[in-house]
Image (cartoon, rainbow, N blue to C red; front, side, top):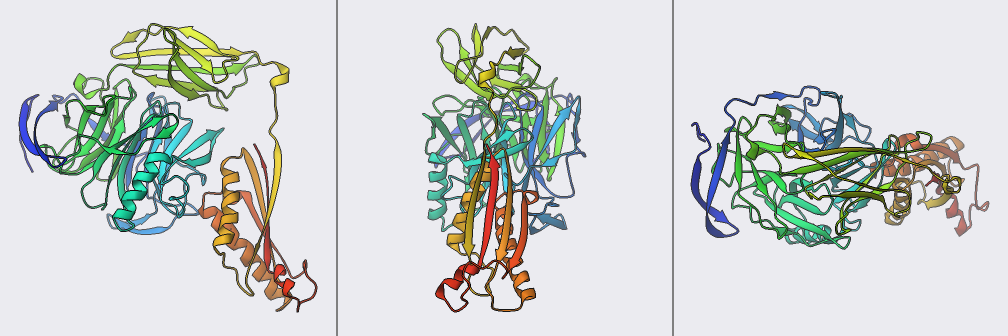
Length: 530
């Protein structure tokens, strides 16, 4: 622990990096009392908030909180002497200069398994998050991507590839245990960083995976990892500037926040300590910043803090960033949802992708690719082909484009409605689900995650053994057991109705026949549209 004043000085230190001794020149920034940090009471709770993520335009802020209060919340001990629950993903939107009261994401993302490390996409239309739910090994987890449809996230899918393989390998090597504390996705969705290690209370390192031909590469350790502890990583709007916390560099004591630049070949630039007032002798971590470099946020002692960083040392801020925003609407002013690509006109190469919001038509691109001419096209190159240039001022180029598309009548389609039914059988006088039952229900979960709307009805049934009243209750227990399983996997409980027919609807009338076991069942029907 140290207590001294520094002023843009250069300190040379020695430490262990990847098992070898290295000498690193470390710059410590001093903002000369230009920055004041303040706690954001409207976002914080009595519990712990951590692992922040912000969209490049500063409109969406995501974080993990273990405040609970949800139907699926599970007690997980105490924090600062108060009850805490399994972690959930929360978010807030900024209106003017004020963050709205945060909202907990729905059950397509959050479960009783504990979710963490949210990463919001550049356009706010996707969120990547961690979930250690029971089937993460075979569903491409523990990192998943959910898509915003209207006001609800759906279609949650595991990232899979080298991310899943790396974590599963390390999990097995460590004796069926592994820990992470911070992950980041680049705005273009092609770079993934992860802070991880065998023990949550032990040291962690930073690893990288790149998306190549649609698949994630096997993770490799970044050279900024030290013999100490690295956590809480974030990639800024330029897709190159990286912020992370570490106690492996000589700083103020505990975890300090550092900045570096990630190169295409996986090497990193100079590691810079971002200095006071962000770093203290305590643990400081979770730093995020908007693409224009004017708003910084971080975590201290489990609370979210804000700082106006407009007058900060320029070396604190991301590199040159291009922000291209806009709306897509039809000739009648109705918002349209399109998958978009941003291209470099000169070479025709795709720079980034985005998706317009179905409720507002809004879209956003964030990139460090500075070109003479840009072009926005829809994914089938049929309706949109807009060419433009962007002027850069103070390290940021901003362009807003409102696109109007005349949609031919024959292209208008309506959502298709489907129906699927399953039957789950139970042992006599039991309401316990077995592995095969859970597999059937997992198929239903997959349908809910990829549907625009859905409704589920579950009816429990019994054989004739026992009284009518008892069997009525037993049938309800069976239906409820199925509902509880679905809810635990992320299905909205408000979309599920349960009932019991008891022994009134037998499939086999002869109670002594072996086929009478078919009566001990629960029938589920889902009606959905996509």
